[in-house]
Image 1: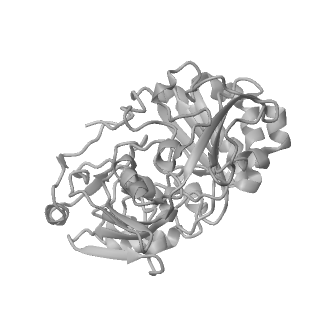
Image 2: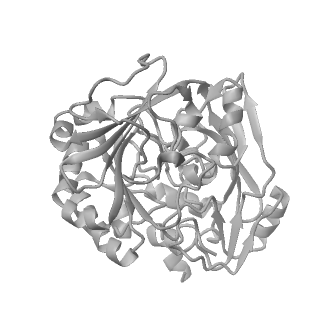
Image 3: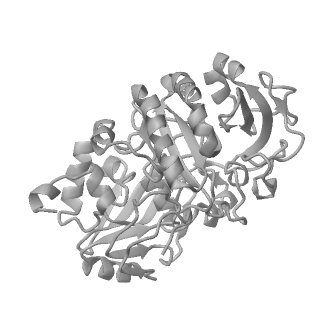
Amino acid sequence: MTNWARNITFSAARVHRPSSVERLREIVAGSRSVRVLGSGHSFNRIADTDGDLVSVAGLPRTVEVDRAAATVTVSGGLRFAEFTGAVHDAGLALHNLGSLPHISVAGACATGTHGSGAGNGALASAVRALDIVTADGGTVSLARGDKDFAGAVVALGALGVVTRMTLDLVPAYDIRQWVYEGLPYARLRESFDDILSAAYSVSLFTRWRTDVVEQVWLKHRVGDDERATAPASLLGAEPADGPRHPVPGMDPVTCTEQSGVAGPWYERLPHFRPEFTPSNGEELQSEYFVAREDGLAAFDALARVRDRIAPVLQIGEIRTVAADEYWLSPAYGRDSVAFHFTWIADTAAVTPVLGVIEEALAPYGVRPHWGKLFTMAPERVRALYERSADFETLIEKLDPQGTFRNDFITRYFPGNQAQRGA
């Protein structure tokens, strides 16, 4: 079995798609090793196992909107595109969405996936409560304010199977999206923070080939900015004369509406439309996070090694993420700038470049995205998270026999596995 990106062949002895939580509990209780598969949009072996691979996509569909509490409770296997329309119809909205509406809510939150916006936390920052099936087949419910909650949301699937999540909502809103082209690096350096704060959500796309950011995507929240036409220029960048795909030359038909046409949040915050498959599998991805105050210095560090980056890159994206409280979130405790890389599908060519990037960003306490490719040593990764020891303690508490461990989890969070001879 392979995942979305086709770069991982899973080693699972058995694959399950239970249709009830009761059946899921039986599977987990009867297995020595379980990992959970979300939408399959990971680029490393975080979801791999040689035991039982479980998909939660077959669990009963739950979409329960509570207007009074401003929350929605959803089954963990749902993809964002499967419930955001119902939330909007109730007059409510999520604070943000990722680039893809095709990813599952539990999987996205578990790996620290995010959208963009200087004031917008990662997708997990909306989580108010979650239900987990633990290794013995029992269930645990945690809510914001509970002792273990901050360690259980971005948890890499290491604590159990998340079956339900309750998410905080805000009043529904509309977005206008504009694309600008040709932002000179020199002008970006002059106003780095201002550009990344120029709209409710901002994405900079660059191939790291020249001294120009090819595209700037601005997603303005209607009401915050009432302009119905694009400003004439943006620090030397000009408005695109039609729809654009982030990768120059690709058909923009797959992308969400641009050119300042107002529309609901769930149809504008993602870059891609749910009715199109966003990837043909011919790519690899990496992403690295630094503190926002180090964003410009990190940009310059990457620009100095762009001769190594550009030959194996399809497109790079720069976004912002607000700080959160989750122990393993790449944005834990600090407002962040995220540097994303969509690579060509050549692992041998890309892997050395990851080391170059990681070395260039090392002075800035760089944290990798858990669901994408990176080569940083485990001890270095653990040192970047001050609550990593607490997370290992939480694993021991909820999964003392290591049912939800795999090579990936044990590599970065070994805990007491050595004493067990694991």
